[in-house]
Length: 66
Image: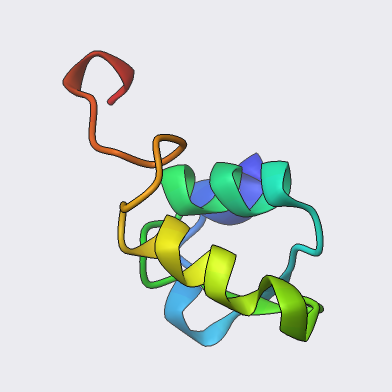
C-alpha cells in the first residue's frame, strides 16, 4: 500500500476495498477524505460517510497526528 501511495498514481481513479472500519480510517488518513471505497456493506455506508466528513472521533483533525 505504501508503494502505491508513494507512486505517482492518481488515487482518485482507484477504488479501495475496505470492508472493515480500521481499514477505512487508515485510508481516510493516508489517501484523504475523497478516497473511493468499495466492498462496504450498505448498513455501514452512513458510518463511513460520517468518518469521511470528520464527524466521528476516529477522523477528527488533530494536528499532532498529521
